[in-house]
Length: 462
Ligand code: GCU
Ligand code: CA
View 1 (cartoon, rainbow, N blue to C red):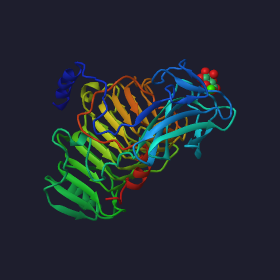
View 2: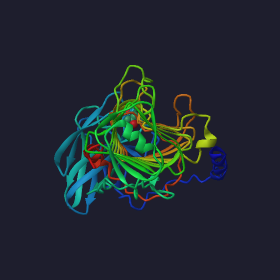
View 3: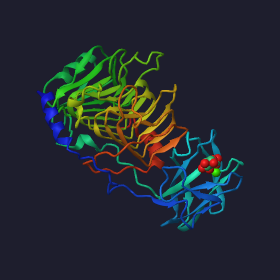
View 4: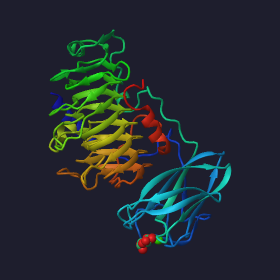
């Protein structure tokens, strides 16, 4: 029955609602200074032979020590400025430069190779500025010169991070997600009691006290909040299943959750309204990628899901959204998920890998060390999924995003990327446009994302 309804809903959506995203009103806009516009200075030439630049060209500095690119930047007040430097480096090695602010060297910067002269990435730097006019100069320290520089985005101050604790994103839509609110609160300290309470009918908040080891699958019923006590509570060796409920209205918070050999740790199938918040989900890296299955898999037309402030650590097939290339009729126009402020650390694939879902919103996440082999990647949009990948930090990530190329056997998906910061990472491949988001949110400035996520994500932070 559900599957038939999905087909009908899909026919309505196919009428062509894909619009180009506009900047949400709440998003603090940095000021862009193009390298080709005076008073910027380029000791070299303004070129336009490599595509993908913004404005009318980019600075190709002479390949010589001291052949600089300089910007004149205005600050409303003295303070910390976040610089987003957009550059391409098609050479084989990194190029280094001093960052000189108002005549003083502030730091040295390494511009990694981006793979091609038309592959542009943004590097985020933080500097102190004076009120009024400031000069910001990049001065190469070797005769290799600078990378090609397109522009710098400058934001003084920056936006405060969204308060941990608030729910934002897709789980707030279409009635919202409240979990066990309004029902009794029950503390459990054995796995048997946990299972009984989680499977019982009616709203309830279940406080999990201690690390409870189980087996098999726990079928969580509707209107539940499952929350760990303190920093060290949670469940292991069991699958938490949220299935066939519209709405499920389930919240999972402050839990330590371990990967389950041969199975998913959390599985959301054909269910709506789920909030996965401030958990630590971790496994071990086995030589066989299939030793564990998914950590958080979202399939069969599941919808209205927010995944926030979690740590995902040491897992291979981390978070799949849409399980099969041949499941369009059930999945298309569903699988709407927001991932924000998560720390993906050594999650070697699928963070997330999305088929059909639109718009899956991936913002303000910190990705680290996703590089155990040449096929490691953070995000993949395939089978015409639509992803907005916004203000995330990628450090040591083999490939930040796949989209235009497809991934594995799957056809391409669409992906819009903006304001991301990549360090020693492969590109975030983009493709086409995606549908606008219906909800309001404030994306944190990418310059502070790493510190707020490492401080605020995971169990023990409530
Ligand atoms: C090539 C490329 C330039 C680049 C230069 C360099 O000539 O076309 O855009 O600036 O290499 O090595 O700096
Ligand atoms: Ca050059």
